[in-house]
Image 1: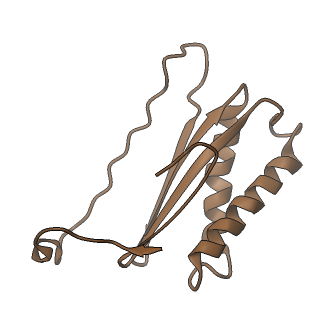
Image 2 (image 1 turned 135 degrees about the horizontal axis):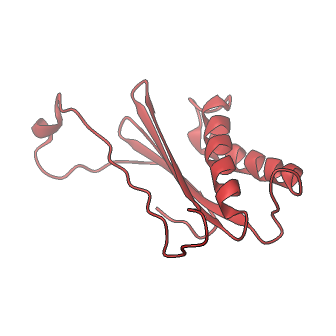
Length: 136
């Protein structure tokens, strides 16, 4: 966790309204579903952004499941307020364990999966975690 460095005139940011834009575009495989997923959560002076990239035959199912599960686990973790780094780690580990439990039931993880990146901004700090080959 590092404080954000703001270059330029900070007076411009005082009282400014910040917005979020997003776009999720399907790859050029006409016969396969969009395997990308994302999440945006903004509440109580903090923002959580997640990007998930599925791969394999069930990648779209897994990335959608991970998008819901990992963010839920992160914000409900007992250490969310005091130690977001530990909460992120526990959320990813818990989601991996849940994917393993659901293998063969909700989806097949033999040849499918999802990468993931989560960024939480709270105050002047960014907390970043990723799994797979996703990077922020």
